[in-house]
Image (cartoon, rainbow, N blue to C red; front, side, top):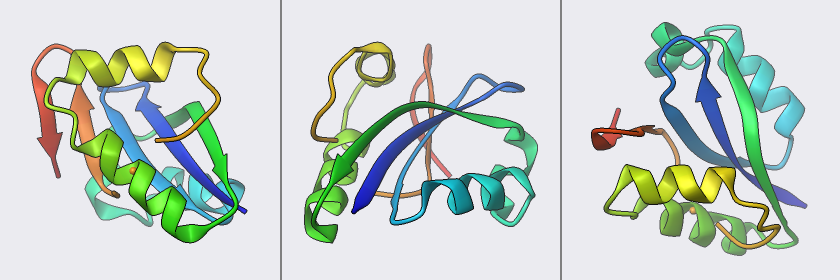
Length: 102
């Protein structure tokens, strides 16, 4: 099982999108500083998850989400009650300024 997730920084309010087969381990790694690009954004909180049986489905959904042209659309997705399908890794999105790739 693979999880696509959106995290939000408490410090900067930016969003981070990724996917993993072990969400608990990944969140601990992000919040412990093991992901250097996220150091200044710690702590991060899970705000949205979606589950997929296949790696390819999770990867595609992460790419789909990260390709969004407007951060407001991504913010709306993160705040929605939808339970399926999102897609790539290492993007931080600023709600008011558009998509920022780190």
